[in-house]
Every structure is written in C-alpha cells, then in structure tokens.
Length: 251
Image 1 (cartoon, rainbow, N blue to C red):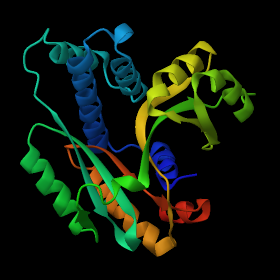
Image 2 (image 1 turned 30 degrees about the vertical axis):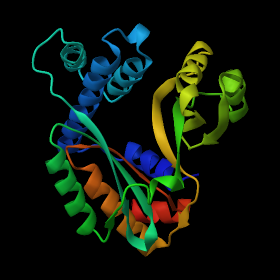
Image 3 (image 1 turned 120 degrees about the vertical axis):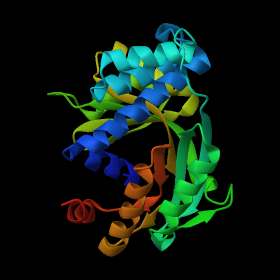
C-alpha cells in the first residue's frame, strides 16, 4: 500500500481540529466552484462536479455552502474567483518525491508559500518534470466497508468498468483505475449498491522510497506543513511507510 494511502487513512481516523476542518471546508468548496465553472452547474451532466459535491458532503460541508459554490462557479451568483491550477514538484527528506497541487487566485502567493513550507521542513523545490515522472495519474474510488463485503465483491462489482486493482485500507477499499475510467468505476460501484466515500483523480507513485521512523516523521511533518496552506488542494508523495512505523509516528 502506498504511503499516501496510509497517510490519508491515518488523517481520516484522527480527531478533526476545528481550525483545520474550516480549512478543509474552504478547499472542498473551492473544488466544487471550479468544477461548476469548468463543466457547468448540473451534476448530472458534470461527473467532476458530482464527485466534488459528494466529497464535500462526506466531510459534512453544509449544503448551503455547496449550493452557493455551484452557483458562483456556474455564474448564477456573483462573486466567483478566477482560480488557476498549478502543480509544484519537490524533493523531501530522504529523497522522497513530492507533488503539490494548488488551486489559487494568486500564483505568486502560492509559489512563495509552497517554497517556504518545503524548504523550512528539509525539502527542496524541484524543476518541472523532475519529480512527476515518478507518478502515474489514476482514478481512485474509496468504498466504505460494510458487513460481509469482501475485496472480491468490490472487484466483481467494478470489473467491467476498467478497474486495475482493489486494495484493503482497513476501514475502506481503494479501487484504482485509469484516470479516464474514474467516472465509470464510480457509477458501477454506486449501481452495485456499494457505499462510495469519494472518487478522485490521484497521482500514485510508480517507485516508492522505504522510510524508517525518523525519516517518516520528517517527511510527514513536511507534508502536513504544505497541506495546511490555503492554496494547496492535494499533496502526493512516494514514501513507503510500513504499518508499524505509521502507528508510531501517528500515535
């Protein structure tokens, strides 16, 4: 299992601090707004928007906030910002490759904030293309575990939709597909009655770097610092952190 998947699961299990929940709400609302601006305000005809709304609702973002974001993005409501998608590349401690996805209305601010967070935590900002080749763009659907549901059941439900693999993350199943098959897999899982927690385009590492406890602490400290930035939507990294070490660093 990739370090990122474990880290995402660990964060999900942690108690959510109010301040960080507020930042999460803002990031999810921004994603909804951009999806509506890009593909229109009707979720039925805009799978990206449907996924963004589902993810926001799964994190208890109020419906009013979601509705306003859709209306701002579609132009029905004034006040929508012009966001730009930017990806930064970096190397963290122990040579771990890091991809930082931003959604910002101020490119200079985003670049400065990301650079400071990375360098202050033992990392180095890298040139475009020097890190991204270590990752593959994939679709990732998370399915909540329910009594009696097995990995084989999930695989059978989405097999014809283009699934590549199913991983057991403990309290959920991770369904990986080609990026272009993400919506088909999400729909197939939902049609089969599976509880879809989220459906996202992700950067999954093709090569991983195994870490000991000390290195894992340093890498995760950098990741947390970058994730905490307002302009940052996602952070991907190619660390291979064992279950035992992950338990130690997240205790």
